[in-house]
Length: 398
Image (cartoon, rainbow, N blue to C red; front, side, top):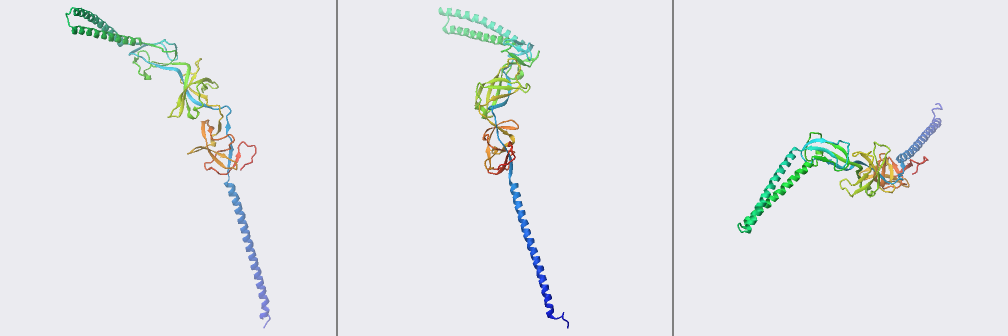
């Protein structure tokens, strides 16, 4: 038997194999441990990176601005329409036909000037009939008077009774009353005949002529379609303006106002507040005011649309961009960034809307930092990273 098959010779070989296998297993285990540690470290780093990125993305970055004070006090611009100081539609007072008109639109007239003649054949005939009736009643009056006087003499001789004399006196009184009625009817028709001439009631400008020669004329009843002329006094002019309730306290009688017209750029006309309604209209919540505007050269015309600028107080107001306001169901709000970067939603009262900017009457101060283009998701107490739009440096404060 050979040595290789002997058990004592195979024992060292088995030990070498076992040692080699143990080394291999150890190496595998070490490699597995190294891979596990590497995986844990990578996952930890990724987790920390994710947390950092999430915290960075969770921050709300905003741009802040500050309100701009107005150094010239409060002025309110409102639309208005110029009117003649006196504007009167002139109606006919009698039936007839327009015989002739003497003044056309744009004509300057003085008080008492003849504007038109009306032909009134029916009224002329009624007047002639009334005069004839009056003469008839006057003749009857003479007969009744002489009859009453004879009966008074007969009563003195006791020829007739007192009752018969009273009847004659009553008949005389009735004829006197009929004569008075006839006189009143004649006077009425004479007055109507006097209305055949249309006279200017005041000095001014004819701004409308509605009828022409031969047109049927009927007595006016307030309907502008029946007006023969419209007469306006153009110096001075007046305008009625409706001031919102929030500005009504600053409006006083006698205050100067500036009036401008878009067709006359760069020209400003000066008037004053003549009177106010003294009460707020419950339907519109506005105060009606009347403005008087001198117009000696006639450059301004009644009916023109104008812009009225009136002072509403000496106190300063603040203006902010319109995109700094949050319009919510509870009312307009602005987002104010306080110390520490916390947001506070503040209610504000809006005055005039200038388009890109808004006037704020109350709710903020000039030193407040207001969020520009605030997100609808902003809530009270939210922490943001704010950058002042007007800052010279690019640093952000939290």
